[in-house]
Length: 319
Image 1 (cartoon, rainbow, N blue to C red):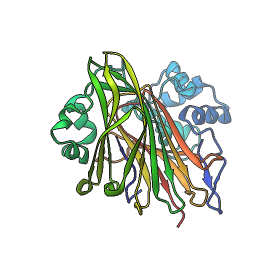
Image 2 (tube, helix red, strand yellow):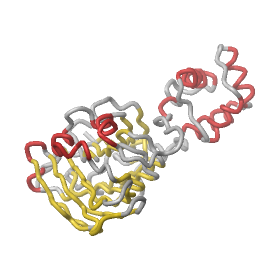
Image 3 (tube, rainbow, N blue to C red):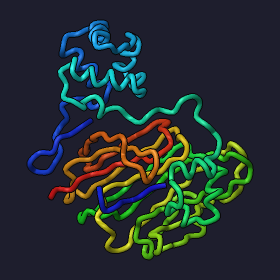
Image 4 (cartoon, helix red, strand yellow):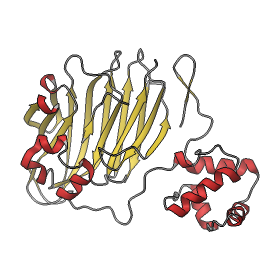
């Protein structure tokens, strides 16, 4: 599920006009590491030796994997090596660290439904989502897992979120799944509307006291175990929503693909955008990376088999 906005908050650099200019680097950890090694004229074996001289042991294979993007530093020992690499490669402090993404899930991706413990691990205790669902939270979509999620957020000329369109493919974890429940919170719930494009709109509950909308999207028939289903819908905001500063989705499992697409009005462009990750909705962001606006005034991120947690995009407006 997601927070459409909240009143708080290939790299590009803002120009004096407020638009974003082309990046100087490819922007990934692997690309920046590889380019820095080449620029310094060092072999990976020489890099390994310089690390060893500082008491840091990293294998040649590991350095090669980092450079090719096959793996990334995650453990404390590896992160110490990254700090040393910035000095060895004459990079500003934090250059490589800032490009390390969230930890990748280990082992096989589970096909088991989330369950209450995993839901609370991401949402926290007594979250707005749990309060909105009440007793239903314990079985929140526990007969489904998400395979693919695409969502598009539209920001208007007044810097406000006007609509969110979601397309989602799910698989049933047991026989009998009939609908998926979606929850949007931190929105002006009284005037929000939901329109189904694929699937059938069922019950819609507006909870102004929680600033939340709960809706059911029906499949039209019970699914068999392992059968997939597609739903698509648009949530439209009513008049005068708050100024939008970020959008995030809470993932309790690891979908094969998650695409978040933020479309800005050409008369209201941000100075910069960042993708971010949090382990839970009430914890600090522990990973942020600058991302670009494209020629259509949009920013996006595409994640594959991303870890459970909170993934989103934030942006800053010109003053």
